[in-house]
Image 1 (cartoon, rainbow, N blue to C red):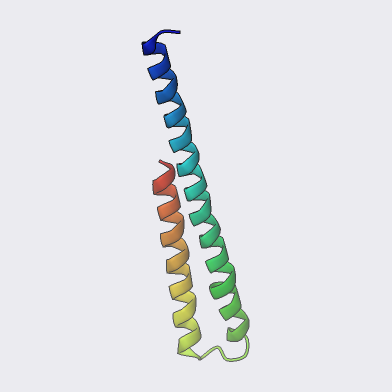
Image 2 (spheres, rainbow, N blue to C red; image 1 turned 45 degrees about the vertical axis):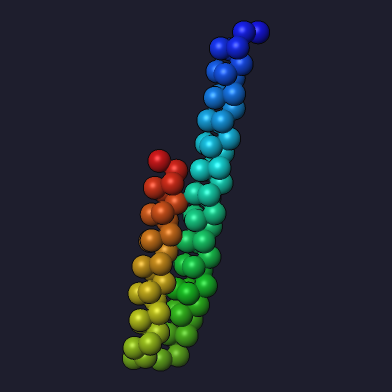
Length: 80
């Protein structure tokens, strides 16, 4: 195997390792988005059943939806 072929193999392994890192990091952000949605948004919806006029619950739902969107967006950007 020539020196050039070894260098190409090392580059290929590096690209595969970087791709794997990006995929894992994007999965992490997608999972954070899912957990944020489940914990904040769905949790506050249960609280909202008691008192629909509570502005803090509506605020938390909006913040949870925004956080979910931001985390999913970051995961998507990392994947691309």
